[in-house]
Image (cartoon, rainbow, N blue to C red; front, side, top):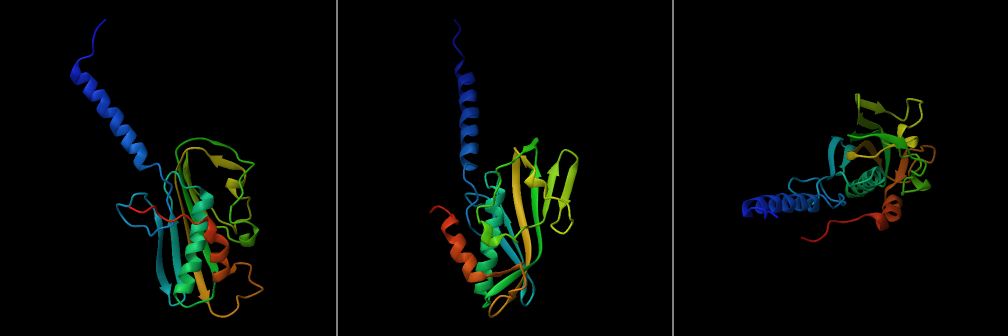
Amino acid sequence: MTTPKPHALGAKTLVILLSVATLSACATATPYQPNLPRQKASGGYSEQRLEPNRWRVTFAGNSLTSRETVESYLLFRAAELTQAQGYDWFAIADRRTDRQTRSYLQTDPFYGSWYGSHFGHFAPTWRYHGGHGWSTWHPHMGSPFFASRIDVQTIQKFEATAEIVMGRGAKPVDDPTAFDARAVQENLRPRILSPAPE
């Protein structure tokens, strides 16, 4: 029986340790946090002011962050930002969610957003990458939402974007895209995961 050479054992051990370290670094889904470089878990929220009461809000998740979580964190951030700016409600003016994938599709009969029926009119638009390049789905296209029928098994990331318009006073009762910022935060807060302490 031959005994492996010491340097061969060292190289194999090093490869295994590097693999474990890489997996450990990526083993945390993106928590609710600002999207800053060199964080423990990549991704988070960001926003840009477009007009005095109009903002573009984005939430980017890593490969372990589900589409439902990304959409919900985006909605929570929109509500949080609305109140921080001194407004009471916000309306979704435009929505988009990007999905980048690298594997295969299968039916997904069990998908349901965890923020529930309270926010049934919140549906970001999507951009997703498949075998033939980038495709886009928009809620006003009239066709069924692709992810209601299929699920991408190997996901690199989800990123949702919404343009919101903020207002004061009671939200418009005849606008299904308008949300009461305080109510959104109260309903979603129990499901919001903050970053672990360093």
